[in-house]
Image (cartoon, rainbow, N blue to C red):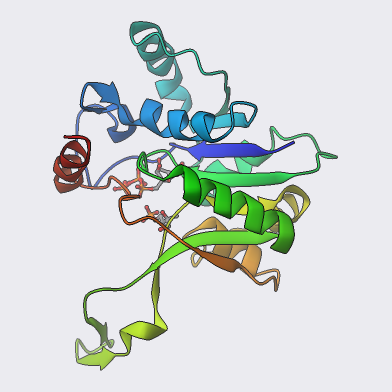
Length: 222
Ligand SMILES: Nc1ccn([C@@H]2O[C@H](COP(=O)(O)OP(=O)(O)OP(=O)(O)O)[C@@H](O)[C@H]2O)c(=O)n1
Ligand SMILES: C[C@](O)(CO)[C@H](O)COP(=O)(O)O
């Protein structure tokens, strides 16, 4: 069976809003509900695990009632790092389960059905897959003395989620000790020595991080 773990255990410091950013409404509906809906639309049989700080779970249940949100999901507790949040979500998947697990940021409500499908199918064949897109701005490397140097942007890709993995592989990877360079789930799997396949992401799949991103999100739905 396939699973998606929607991680929403962060602090939202860059958003700086009173309400945690995953609950902020965009065109009248909380971001997190929009994100979960995308995966349910892709596959209504997909098992959904939502990772939320324990202190926010009662509020989430209240929001679900208010919005008549009835998509079935399990809840895991958020961790101090994204690594720990993903790991807590993975712990709810039975040990002997076969299939693919996607790990997706709760604050990326604009992932397309095609990208979700491509990520799950590529991981089924190649064990690990991530959506990426080409950099469109010029990039500059800054050294430790503050000096700058132009770099070849075609050497880089911007990485999105969902990041999809064979379930056994993901569980093995998240048994490692946490390292600071684990900024996404693929970096955890890669540190086992595994290759991660890349699929073309969709540009609208932004990570809602700052108040500016809320304006972009409203515009995308407008
Ligand atoms: N300990 C953490 C940290 C992050 N996340 C989740 O990972 C996703 C991407 O992280 P980001 O957008 O950076 O969220 P925050 O960490 O909440 O933001 P900030 O760094 O501004 O505090 C978010 O859905 C966030 O909730 C998580 O589940 N657990
Ligand atoms: C996982 C991620 O969204 C891929 O782009 C990103 O690495 C999360 O980074 P954050 O700074 O912890 O939000």
